[in-house]
Each structure stands twice: as structure tokens, then as C-alpha cells.
Length: 337
Image (cartoon, rainbow, N blue to C red; front, side, top):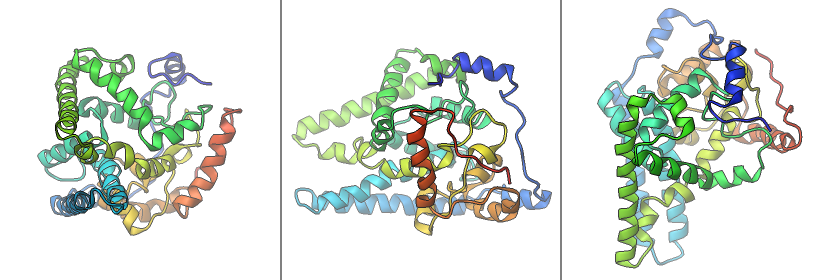
């Protein structure tokens, strides 16, 4: 199995091959059209954010009222998805600072969503910046979630955030003592570690507080609202996420070969904030989520045909991941156009 360690031997190979922070393919888009596409909107982002928060409150209230009955199972299932999955796309878009025109609004929503996703906000902003500069470049990209040759059980564990929580917990503890992990030190500037330390301590204090609350009231209910939804409500985000890059080419400088767009219905696009247009997002990461459908319309003739649905994408992804357990050279072949 290849060594996917960030900063490991594969990073040296990538550097020698000219794959580090290199130039990537871009389709042609009219200058005036692009100027309109990159325009950010406080109103659009505020509307979508308020709707998400309203759904979170309403589903949370229903879950609270149903506690102690069988109705609590579907109620918390819906609340968990709003907390553990829908937050991920808000974290992502506000991390790019493209959702709102206001930097403050982006940062406030980003930090709220990062907490819900169990992601220390400073290190993850730098991690995601590296993911965009060196997308699926082995040894450089810290966000290669579905690695070739890895046991398929890792996918199952990730549906419940098990591997993420273990790795992030180790990082929070290390950061809280002012120490970066080895991979974190490769992509995050040393001067940012102090901020990571403070946020890590705040996260640990918050989760210890929730645990203490559970002990004090002799009920798991507080954790069902804060903390545990990251586990039981994460599965939809993983389903969305696996469609982004899994099974495609590694170590190429063309997003058409390592990123896919998947057509989704309106509900999924709301939950995912149009990140199903993932190929377009990687090529033009400064375009806000609400403009991605129009960007797709403008460049679709220059890009591979998108998958018809999530099921259509999974029909090629899952068999490929299974085959890669025994043959890491297996990948999904794609034409650049």
C-alpha cells in the first residue's frame, strides 16, 4: 500500500515530478460571466443558513419532546443529519469565505459548523487549502479520505466518524499542549499553532462539560444534542463525500481526472450546498455555492459528463474500492472531456 502520510516519502516524489502547487487545467469562461459568478451574496447565504438553523431547532425540539418514546429514533435521526451532515457543507463553504460577502458572517458560521463537525477550525482551514493546491497528490493532500488498498471497513467506520474522532481527538490533545502533529506541521504555519491550541482547549472543555452534564442529570440526553450527532448523523455527509474523488486518478494535474460532478435533487443540493458540482468547485474555488449550477451550465461542454445520481456514482465507486484492496493500480478511467 502506498504511504499516504503527509510530508512522507511520497511528498518528495511529488516534488521531483513537479506536482506540488503546480498549474492545473482550467476551462474557458467569459471574463464578464466569471465576474458575475464570483459575486458573493449576504442575502442568499443568510436565507440558506437561517433555514438550516431553523430546521436544526425544529427537529431538535421534536426530538426532545419525543425522548422516552419510540418516536425519538426517527426524530433524532433527522436532527442528527441536520447537525452532523448538513453542517459539513456550511463548514466547507464558509471556510472558503465564499458563502457570505461578510467575512465576519463567514467566520461565525464556519466556527459553529466546525464544532459540530468535530474539526479544530484553524488546522482544518490550512488542511483544506492544501487539499485545493495539491488535490489527491499523495504525500501532499491531507484529505485523501478513501485511500487505495485500505480495508473497506474504514468506509463503514467513517459513516459513524469513528476514525475521524480518534484522529481529531489525538490532535486536540496534542494541540492543547502547544504541539502540532507531524502531518499538521507540514501544512499549517507554526505561528498558527497558538490559535489551534486555544481552540483545542475550548473544544475539550466543551465536550467535558457536556459529559459532566450527562453525569449530573443521569441521562445521555445532553450528548444526544451536542457531540453524539457527529457520530450518528454523519453518514449522509460520508455518502456525499465519497462521490467527490474516490476511485479516480492520483497524482495528476487535471481535476477532470480526479474529481467528479454528480447530479442531485433539490433537497440534497440544499443539504450539500451544491457541492455535488465538485469538479467545478475545484477548478474555480472562488465561485460561491449558489453560482455553481450556472458555472456548470457554462463549462459542462468542456468537462466529463456528470453522473446521473448518487446511486450512479456509487455503482462505479464501491466495486473499484473493493478491487483496490488487492490491486492498487485499479482506478476508474476517465476522459478529460
